[in-house]
Image (cartoon, rainbow over all chains, first blue to last red; front, side):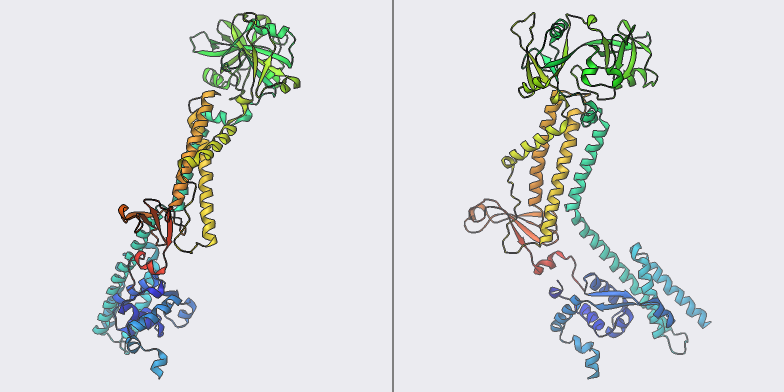
Amino acid sequence: MASETKLSHTAAMILQAIDTGCVYGFSIMEMTGLPSGTVYPAMRRLERDELISSRWERQSIADAEQRPPRKYYKLTAAGRVTLEASRKRYPLLERMIPSPEARSV
Amino acid sequence: MRPALRSAVGRINRCILRCASLLVPRDQRADWRREWNAELWHMRRSSSPPSKQFSWKAEQAAAAFCLGAFQDAFCIRNIRRQNREIAPSQHGSAGECLCWLAGLLALSCILARVLPGVYMESHPSRYQINPGLILLQRDLFTDSSAASITGQQFLDLKASRQRGIDGLAFYRMTKETLSSGLHVKPKWAVAHANFNLFALLGGPESLAALSSESARGLSPVVLSDELWKREFGGNPKIVGSVVRVGQSAARVVGVLPRGSWRLPGGADAWLLQPDAEINRSSVGYVVAHTTRLGQAEMYGDRLHVDGFVADDPDADLWGVSFDERTRGPWTIFRFAIFLAFLALPAVTSVSLGESCFSSHRPSHIRNLYRWIFLSAKIVLLLSIAYFASLDLSYWNATGYSALSEYAQLASTFFICLFGMRWILLDQRERCPVCLRRVTHPAQVGQASRTFLAWNGTELMCTSGHTLLHVPGLPTSWFGTQRWMYLDTSWKFLFAGTGVG
């Protein structure tokens, strides 16, 4: 299914942002410039379609840093395949949200 | 002032999140709020000025961030609703089918426990009688439930030496009142039997030991369970008391358990009398015990008895085995199933319609599930047929009757036959992958173009696994239904809303 899924540009941006290391909602908002009302619902749908998965940060880590624990997102294998297809479909995607390696270059 | 304002705005933001969380399904609400509160904390921390001074711009951004929670909450709500809409595809699922069958089975089981006739019939141990007993009748084809031998004939038989028989007992049925008081009571079926009847049948030891010597004075009477409960209110002290049977007094010597024996006549009470008191002209039943020689000479379940019938010298006496009356419902059930399976090809094709267009085959585990499902349906159907046929046949019967047996045979046969037909039809229309019934039939092609392209009905699995093509006009190249397995390229048609 994943290889056949055609993402919207917004969803592709969010996937790209997660792939570049923005692993929680607010960082994705900062990276993409999209509002919370767009980012979080899109992430719910991506999670529903098993393109991303989420997990809660351990409480002990958050306690050590004196902050509330966050929910982290990461790409699934299907999400990675879909992202590859989306990069071909949206060639500017990697320019808009470059990966850390590309940025360092 | 500024910290107070900052705190107030923070409370408003949290209130916004709380309101938005009410839109989220209850089981996801706590997790959702935890994530948004954490995100809000991080958002405020990153957008606040370093000096921690109040900034309208930062608070506006935080409020805008929080308002986005409503869109997220609506999204989660929609996703849940879509999942619920997919859930009705449980309609027609294998589990639903088995639940219905199990429900029917439970209903028929409950009825079988409640109906007294069914209970008696399905507990054959309660009416076990001595082996080798036969019921004498005057003709080979006489209805064995009808009395045919007079008291005089019984006495003649008893006096003569009988080949293959070593014990005889006689009883005749009358309708008489039976009560402990003088007020008017309904009439009951009373069997006037001679003393050795219980010993011959193999009744309780205390009753079998009764003899004319031991029961001096009043005649002993044995009550049926039903009469004891209805006439005497189940009084446990009834044994030993004197009751009136018709015009004469008798002493109650025992109560037979429900469903004991299955003698013709359906006696409610047994009045034991010595041979001398047998009414010679009245017609009744003769129970005989056969020796080994007699059993060897039986034709099937019948034995010819050498006996001279004074008023009809040409008449034959035949003994009919009690096996037919005491075999219980299981034998009839097995025979009816055999007949139903024999007749099944006449009402439907026994094929499961597993051919498909391509070489694709479901995995072995899927095939195993299919066979387990089919077997479960058959087992449930046979169980339903057993109990439902008993319910139908014995719902109004209080004891054995040939009519009930025929009814059981017929009802079992028809339930099994048409039940198996339904099972096969149902199985043929179940997706081999998910075992759901295929739906949305669509007519494809035209009958006039049969030789150019196929025409028939196309049904689809709502989960998007398969399409079923059923030819409208079977041809040599498309005679039976075929499955078409859908690959992943079809998924988008069944996936509901797309991503993003």
